[in-house]
Length: 260
Image (tube, rainbow, N blue to C red; front, side):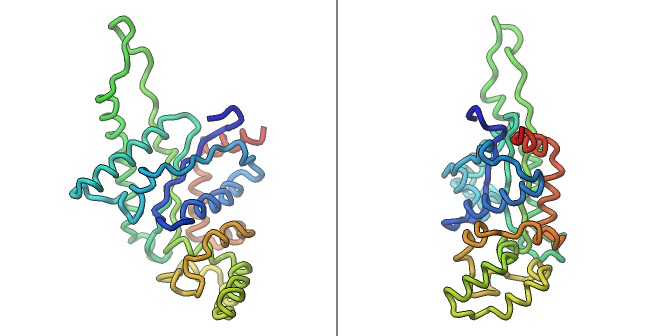
């Protein structure tokens, strides 16, 4: 971490699209501003892509059952990578998956259940790592230093329902502009209805198939004046994620330090 950074944030996403990670990072920045308004982003180290670990997240590979040896190796590498970051002070892992269920059916989401199991297994990964790489002893006696603390609470779930487009399409003004620009206004009427009924977006069975925009303009929707406060006020999956970030006291304190 450089001298001006107050914390590190690792962003892992299951979205394998070209702009997938950049889109999640843009939304994360807007969410963090709701957690600690006016935090200084230049004092945050957003960890760049690490291709092997990114590959292990793609296409739900993080949920691998271990039967395929290549997928198993990727999953092991991903878990070790997360453990390394969770063992460092003032570092946080934002783990993005889609709920794959409309908000009203969120309690039936297989993905959120599997994330809990994934996270619960990380201490075993840390223990195996310590066993394979024992700490040096001082003059053959006690260990030189205690093992690093594994801060599981620093891994925070980023989970839109049903998919990330339910959040991105909340940027109705920009979506209208794109619809006019790229598709001759094919879905202007639908977008105008959603502007008045924002809560409906979290209940769509497939938001990305409801509009001409699809997934093509996700990064533009995330970076052109994304309405974070209005999306939070819907009180569905976006606000649920922001509140999850707020509940991590260490993250709040680290963000506050960026302002000092």
